[in-house]
Amino acid sequence: MTPAHPNPPQPADFRIVDLFAGPGGLDIAATIMGVESVGVEWDDATRATRTAAQLLTTEEKDVAALGPCDAQVKGANVLTGGPPCQTFSVAGNREGHKALEDVQRLATRLVRPNDLVTFETVWKQVKAETDALSDNRTGLVLQPLRWIMEAKLRRKEPYKVVVLEQVPTVLPVWKHYAELLKTIGYAAAAHVLHAETFGVPQTRRRAVLIAQYAPGNEDMDVEFPRPTHQRYRPGVERLPEQGAADRHPQQETLDQGRQEVLFTDPDSTTPITRWTAMQDVLHDRPRDFEVVSNYGSGGDPKKRGRRTSEEPAATVTGKIRRNRVFLLKETKSGTKEIGEELERLTAKEAGLLQSFPAAYPWRSTDVAQQIGNAIPPRLSLHILSCALGFGPPEGKLFEALEEWQPPAVDEPAEST
Image 1 (spheres, rainbow, N blue to C red):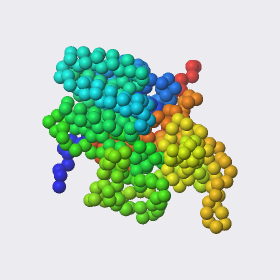
Image 2 (cartoon, rainbow, N blue to C red; image 1 turned 45 degrees about the horizontal axis):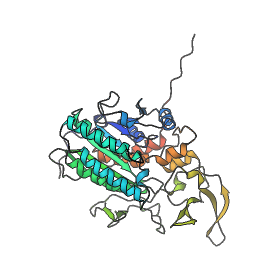
Image 3 (tube, one colour; image 1 turned 30 degrees about the horizontal axis):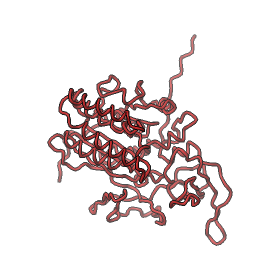
Image 4 (cartoon, rainbow, N blue to C red; image 1 turned 135 degrees about the vertical axis):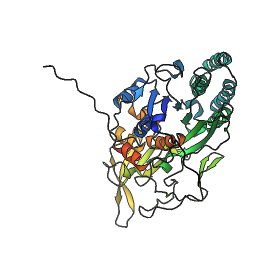
């Protein structure tokens, strides 16, 4: 039997700086866990949502204008972030592949220096090249590496843990980063995770990198969270509500093109729960309904994707309000047919499908875009718990996430 760790990590041991923090999908999960987190966010509307949720946010909005030695973030020993990915997002796009190649090449240059003076020279050269690119968002993907290197060479205190996440097309970049981080003292790995296999009522894939500072032990295995819920596939039946304590399916595979990552543990006795469906979280809706996507399916723009309320939602995007919702009515023969059209999904409902608390205080008129860009908080709980060495998150954390309310703001005392 493996002896217990003499000093298991505690939430107070970690302080997170979250780059490109968005409305707080990761920060709210950290808060629920009791881990201090401060986010760096550019967009004013998104910052307003963070303020309403009373999440810590740096005064400086630009990730590129800050660094590990700045006052508001110098105490952080964990770096997280989800840099913009639009230049990589279109499969088969020539410019997208070129952007991937540029980032991988420039990233390699960034981790080679062993001293601050050399690094600063290299960074100036790299920044000049990225500034000259047609899409300057490509260079933002390099910002986490800059922060990592400055923490190591300027601050002299490397980040203990690094967590980066983005759309699956960024997986080659994260895998490249993982190999580079191994050369500067980190154990690191990158995989694609499926949100619905962690209880999020939505099918959403995220490429995730986890790195842990372990000089001299860079080749150790990096643990990733194991699925707790059934994987959704079209045509696959949902597990029954009772008796869902089946073992992990053999050879459960998370696919990303030709990338295959096996998360199956034949010796695991962890039960798999059926996927969380839309009807499980959208309690103000009739139980049976169907969502018809604004997007085409299978390459046919006229063939709209459809999900019933017994399924997880399709990936929530900033255009979720364009999706149409219809009542499903049971016929005499026991089948279900489409009835009248219902109100379209609200911002609150879109947030619930992303696993945000029902009471999350969304702000601004473009809330859908904030929600669509966010990482699901429930997935963040799994990732952070694993990356920080806490193991699988306890059920009480998920209960706390669902029941979360914006902290009360003290009213000014009345003058007498």
